[in-house]
Image 1: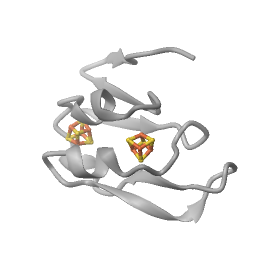
Image 2 (image 1 turned 30 degrees about the vertical axis):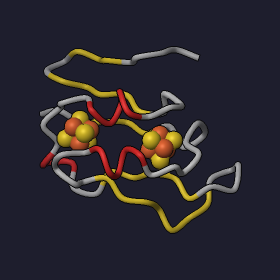
Image 3 (image 1 turned 90 degrees about the horizontal axis):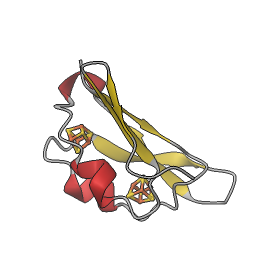
Length: 77
Ligand code: SF4
Ligand code: SF4
C-alpha cells in the first residue's frame, strides 16, 4: 500500500501539499513543530494512491513517498 512520511522538522506549514493532493487526505496539524509551524499530517493513509504530487509540490522536501517497496525521496538533506 502506498504511503507518505512527512518530516515535521522540515515542514514550514505552507499548506501547498494540502492543496495539491488529489485525494485530499493531507491536513494541517493543530500542534506546532519545533520551529513553531503547524505542520502537515496525513489524515487517511489508506486512501493514498502514491502519486507523489505532494512530494513534488513541497518546497522543503519534507515528504517521502513509499510505493510498492520503493522509496521516493526527491532530495536528501
Ligand atoms: S502521494 Fe498523492 S495521494 Fe498520497 S498523500 Fe501524496 S498527493 Fe496525496
Ligand atoms: S508542502 Fe511541505 S512545507 Fe508545505 S505544509 Fe506540506 S509538508 Fe509542510
